[in-house]
Image 1 (cartoon, one colour):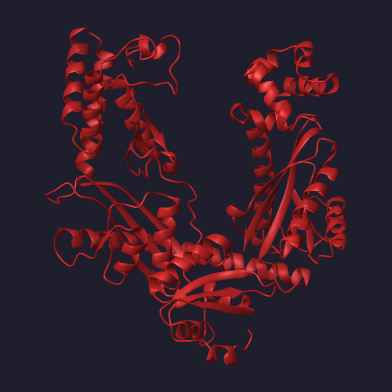
Image 2 (image 1 turned 90 degrees about the vertical axis):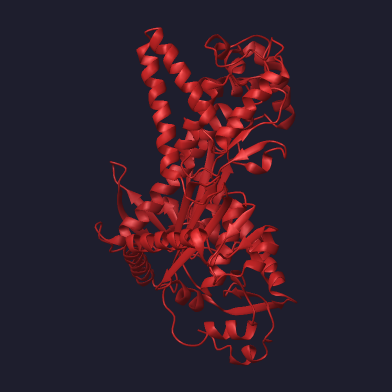
Amino acid sequence: MKNFKEKLALVPTKPGSYQMKNKDGLIIYVGKAKNLKNRLKSYFTGTHTGKTRMLVEDIDDFEYIVTSSELESLILEITLIKKYNPKYNILLKDDKTYPYIELTNEKYPVLKIVRNTKRSKNKNKLYGPYPNVKAARTTVEMINRIYPLRKCDKLKKEVCLYYHIHECLGYCVKDISKDEIDKMTKEITSFLNGDPTIISEKIKNEMQKASENLNFERAIELKKMLEDIETTLRKQKIDLNKNYNFDLVNYYSDNNFLSIEIFFIRDGLLFGRHNEIIQTISNIEDEVLEYIIKFYEKNALPPKELYIPESLDEELLSEYFNIKVQKPQKGKLKKLLDLAKENAIEQMELQEETLKKDDELRLNAIKELENLLNIKKASRMESFDNSHLFGTFYVGGMVVFEDFVPQKDDYRKYKISAEVKDDLSAMKEVLYRRYYKVLMENLEKPDLIVMDGGQTQISVAKEIVDSLGLNIPIIGLVKDNNHKTSYIMNDKYEILDVKKESNLFLFLTRIQDEVHRYAISYHRNIKSKGALASVLDLVPGIGETRRKDLLRHFSSLKKMKEASLEELQEVLPLDVAENLFSYLKEI
C-alpha cells in the first residue's frame, strides 16, 4: 500500500466526492463524504478485511471534488458511478427490472406486463412492482379472461380467435361504446388497487352459470380462481387502517456484509419484498443510500412515499428523488419498519456463512492462480468464444469475471466480418477489436486472458496482444474428446499443476462454460424471429440500404424464407441473393 500521508494532509474537511484509482489510472471506486479528510484517512489507517482490503491494496492514487452541500456530493457520486462503473462500487446482483402491470390509456385499452417503465406513456396506469413475476402474469391472464379487452398490439382487419372465445369485443370491426369501455377499466382499476369485490362477484356469477349449464370443469376452474384471489389478499393484508401506498427500507450489517430489505406496500397490501446482501467498503449509511438510489434507477420506479430507519438521511433521499421520505417513530408503521429489519437479519443469518465461505474459496483460488503463473494479480479475467452456423456467419462473445464473479455489464458481443470462414480468423478479429479499443480508449486491461483451447488458441491471443504492445498473461482451458475441461496451459505452453477437484479448476471451468453459453445464445438470438435486422446484417453483401429494400419488398422473414432465388434476385444482385438464399435455408 502506498503512503499518502503528505497528500492526505492537504485534503479539506469539507463535503465532496472522492475517486480511487489503480495503477493504470482507472477509477475503481467512487464515494462521498461529509468530511473528505476524515473519510479518506480511514482507508489508509488501521486494518481492513474483505472487499475493503482488496480495494485498499488496489489503490495507487486518489482524487476528490469539493462540493457546497452533501446533496451535491451525492448527486456527483452517483453521476460518476454511472459514468465510470467502478469495479468496487455496489453492483446489483439482480440485473432484471421488476415487472409492472400496465393499463393503457387508449381508445381501446390493453392490459399487459411491462418491465421498461420509461417507455410507458405518462397517462398509462402502472401497478406494481411485482417481485413475483408469476403472480403478475397470472393476474393479467385472469383479468383478460374476465374482461374482453383488446388483445392485439394493433387493430387488425378482421376479428381473431379472442373474439370467438368471448375474450375480446372485436374492436377491429365493431364500434364499442366509450361507456362500456370506461365501465371495464373502472372495475379493473378497482381490483388492481386492492378491492376484489366486483371481480369476485363476477366470478361467482360465472361459476353459478357454469354449474347450471353442467359445465363443471369450468365451474371448478372459476372456484380455484376465486380462492386464489381471496387467499392472496388475506395473506398480504396489513392492518394499517387506511390504504397506504409506499415503500419501506431497512437494513442490517455485520462483518462487512449488508442485508437490505425493501417492502412494497400498495393500498394496505404487502405487495412484495426484495432482499439483497452485499459486501461493504465505506460508511454503512452511505452504502445503503447508494443501494437505494441504484435500485430505484435500475429495478423499479421510485414510490411517491418512502419510509426509512432513523440512521439514514431522509432529506438527501427526499431531495434526490423529489418524493416524501419519513422516519416513523412509533405505531404500526414503526412496527412494520422493525419487521423489515427482522427479515434483513434473518436473510443475513441464512446466507452470511455461505457468502463468507464463497469469498474465502474464491480468494484462495486467485492466490493459487497468481502463484502458478508467477504474476502479482489475477483479479479481472476476460474470456472469449465464437459461434457459427456450418462454418459461416460467425459471431463472438466476451465475458468478464472479477475475482471469479461474473460482471455482466462488461460482457460484449461481436459481429464478425462476412469474409471470415474459420475459428482462428474469427478469434483474431475479436481479440484485435477488443484490445485495440482498450488501448485507444484507455479502458481497464484484464489481469488475465482466458482462452477456450490450447496452444493454437493461446498463440493467436499472444500474436494479437504482442502486436498491440500489451503485456497481459494468457492461459488456455483445454478440453478432452468428450468436450470436458481436461487441463490448463500457460502462455509458455506448459501444463499447470491444477487438480481437477480443486476450487481453482472449478472456477475456471465456470468461466469457460459461461463464455460458451454467451456466444451460443447471441447467435441463437440473432436467428430468432425478433432479430430480423440482425439476421440480415450477418449475410455478406447486405448492408443497411439492402436490408431496408428487402423489408419493404417481403415485409417478413417468413416470406423471405419462402421466396425462390429468382424472387430474391428482384431485390439483390445474384451473388448476394445466393448468400441470403443459402443462409435462410439453414435457420
